[in-house]
Length: 305
Ligand code: NAP
Image (cartoon, rainbow, N blue to C red; front, side, top):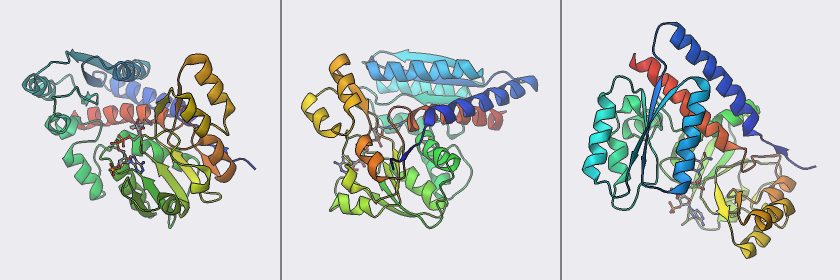
């Protein structure tokens, strides 16, 4: 029997409706609407789309979004100065610096400069430290999104063998901490892990966050495992597509029709034949990540009052 598709779009819609209600209540109590400042440096087309989507999502729930655009040749000192201004601005509850930054700019320095109270991406070392200690704080949106999806679908994490593929600060590491907090037994795998397929096959829950299209093949997955695919990859190469979409002819058709197609790190068609539940890409973790950002902005607004 094919696996259950873990739909993130429908859940994100419900969460966004709840946030819209909470924002209305916040405003009803006499506060101004929460304000999210986005900072986009340069003209990377994907980043422009992400920022546009985030602003549109804010507007739909009543959060004010304040967009700041800087040219690709902006010196670090100017970016620092903008972040300082936003940190001090009483109209701004949350600050999001869209990554990646153009070459020559230090993203860690920028992220560390954001006030932890306005760090709605949850990337500041203070918030990462609070997560490590299991204390309340603003938490990274993508792993939070994965956790809500798992909770919504009633996945009991206690005692589960979880493998997180990827060890980035924004996804892999916080994901592993959140799973550990919920009593899963967690392995973090990465590019130097030996015999990756065998490590992944031990997982009752496999979370893939590597940014490599279709890396995880069907035989890497333990029968009846739950698979969460965080990766978002654009594939244009037909040869690669023919390999990774062998069990998903519709993706191949889209690629041929449009010249490119989005996919995750997991071969979805193959995973659906082995796992018990799998998130699709698009329509899995992605929509929930934006919902997490809205929720963090509201939380920051409540805390910053
Ligand atoms: P990242 O910073 O590039 O980290 C990738 C991780 O994957 C690294 O730890 C790397 O290992 C590991 N890795 C790379 N190639 C590998 C391989 N062949 N075998 C095993 N491990 C490998 O990426 P990220 O920011 O965490 O993002 C990961 C993916 O999630 C990307 O596709 C990104 O677009 C997507 N993403 C999606 C959302 C969403 O809302 N759904 C949000 C954020 C990111 P090393 O540490 O050893 O180099």
